[in-house]
Image (cartoon, rainbow, N blue to C red):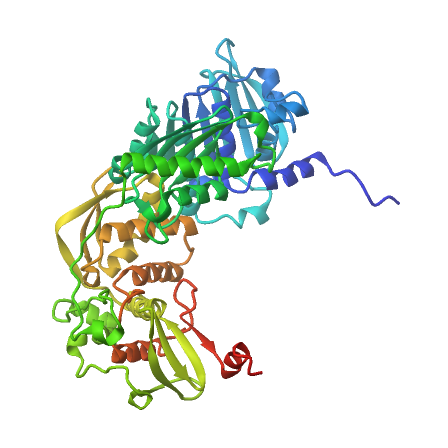
Amino acid sequence: MAKIKLLPENVINKIAAGEVVERPASVVKELVENSLDAQANSISVVVKHGGRELIRVADNGEGMDRKDAESSLKRHATSKIDSLEDIYQVRSFGFRGEALPSIAAVSRFSLLTRRAESESGTEIKVVGGSAEFIREAGMAAGTTVEVNHLFFNTPARRKFLRTERAELIAIIDILTTFSLGNPATDFKLIKDDKLHGEYPACMSLGERIAQVHDKEIVEGLIPLEFNTTEVKISGFIVDPGVSRVNRTGQYFFINNRPIKSPALSFALQQGYGEMLPHRRYPFAVLFFDIESSRVDVNVHPNKKEVRVAKERDIQKFLMETIRVTLHTQKKFPPVRLETIKKESGDLTNKYGGGTDHVSCFESNRFPALNRVNEGITEMLCPEKSKESVALREADNFKILTFDDQSEAATTRIIGQYRATYIIAEIDGKLLIIDQHAAHERIMYEKILDTLMSADFPSQRQLIPITFSLDYREQEILEEYLPMLEQIGFGINSLGRNTYSLDSTPDFLDLEDPKHLILDFVHDAIEGHGPRIVEDKKKRIAANIACKSKSVKGASYLLPEKMEHLVKSLFQTKQPFTCPHGRPTCITLTNEDLEKQFGRR
């Protein structure tokens, strides 16, 4: 008896749907691409429950007659290509002929469409890949596709969907990207029967960016232009002073197709060079018009990736164009002068030079910080120290005993390397501690403990700080707003996409609260957000700990302050990593050193 057999058509379609339809946002992407290919200049997207229950995409494009409507639901039926060679010249978004039948195979699907010259339209209803009816219908010219109960017949796929808000954010991301790539098209998003977002058609890319993003980005926009016979680059980058904590503000389009490209992102970063602060990333909306024969779009059914021949040449063009543009525009990062209190005593003489000292907290001004930080305030304030301990001889070192769960471990502080690493000896091992990561771990656990149990006191802003968010960022802020308020942030909606920051936690007195909030929102977008409340609180605590006055690298500390930092670190629940997973310390045994010196 033969073991190999052909699969039924409905099973084949469901398997294919697994590659094309990953989540509700995948459905929106495929349907919006079809609308744009049909020359629509107005596209409306309706979703309910994050797209789980309903996705409806309506456009005013060319529409289809009855025969084309029926053919569109058959696998590998397309109007975009006729032969294999056409794949290497295709400029449309779709061409594989898989999207509609794949979507129809895993949903309750209906298609309404009419060409402008036809007297009536066509309506097709499909349930789980099986056609229920096809009939004439009255409607305006264009196409409307309605997808109900996505994955109703594949429960294993449905249970892996994220929260309604997370799925909605992914849909907003899709619409935001397509709106930037198609400024002349009107986009509208209706969520649960209410208008949630709108991008009216406009005349230019700059105007579209102003619709989507805040004033700070718009004011920092720098036009970019590069032309050769095979490659054209156009779009906008921003002033180096306007940066983000990650790459969520980078949009790349190759032949008008939105793509994800680590290679182009790297080239963008290299173009800015040292103009950007460490671990900050630029905002950019860039279009690459490349000869079609050099672009392979047939990499994956979801069409998110493309291959480009001689990609390194394009990287070089982009890097050089950015460098020239920034210097021509004279867009250099702003200089910020801050008053920093020096520690008492002549630290230049004690530590061999340098004036980059850690600033001090005044306990009478920040009582809330003392409650959160306990002994950390004293660690950073040399004014409160009884005596300055110089690094002289070994017998002057103090021996610290930590409350280890297993057995007491004795540690002595040896010194500080490059004002960034604390060198200590513990149980015969050499201990090298990253002072910033260590203090970040300490602050993280203090903030998290308070966040889990009580509210932080806050201080009012003399002048409220206003800022704008795009629709995706607004969803993230609304999700985390109750916990941010518990920490001490006072954030109010002023309507549309504008917010005011009226109060901040006491311990953020010298920080920029607006950029801290924006960095947190962008970080949450990239991480897609945790699902449970405890993980959300951990995310907030980790971000605040990283930004809020933690001991930085290149900060000179007095010996007794180093002792206190090390002691506090080993009293935390997890002393060996910072909240982001970086190690706080490394150890070298005597055996390790002897091997390095060839003693064994």
